[in-house]
Length: 255
Image 1 (cartoon, rainbow, N blue to C red):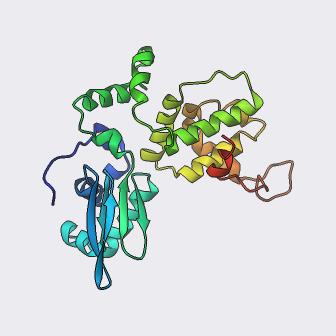
Image 2: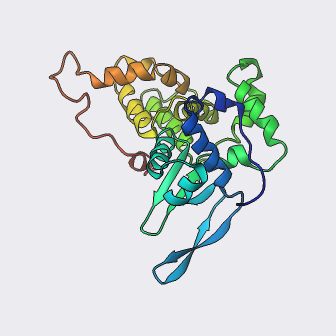
Image 3: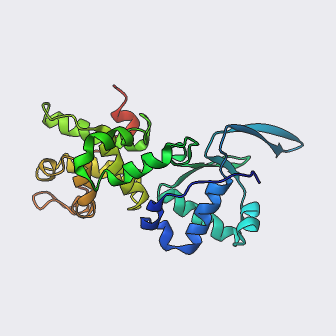
């Protein structure tokens, strides 16, 4: 096991993970197992070995070793890993050789720069102190890369709004992405569900004029999902939108 330390943000207290002691144990175990720097590891394949490159925030997962280290049943460990994936805390990439775990937003919360602690504090208080918008927006930008799911979903909402309102004032997209991040990490929303709700509400004659920010999207998400699943009173019963929703790749293919 590599020596060193990790950071735990106080936002963990507000998360769904914190409410489940078994899930919390697995989450902290994952943070402790993740690599802090790019590295190569060897794994056995048949009669030989192969090299796999791991990025910061990644580690190789095996149910047997995970069970031994956490003192949990292998099936229980795997179920809790899947739960962390569904809440947006991590990604799991499995193949015939191994499973690679990637901690979502690892670089944002675990980088080694001394200034990251003060930046994190500013990012948390940005929502609570609107008067400090300019200063905090600069810090929020450091959270998300341009190809992150948070930015892509925030940009999707903006694109849908601008289809109807070409003169709609472009917001701070990183500020919008922060609300998406909270929906995924704290509210337990799946990115695919967020994508579907965005597409639906921006095609609905009532909600398209009421959901004009990711803050409003987060606030009304449960209500939007409920409405989306009900048939329109003026239409035959069935799916609200018969046309299959576009994937994120299709929506951004012309960018």
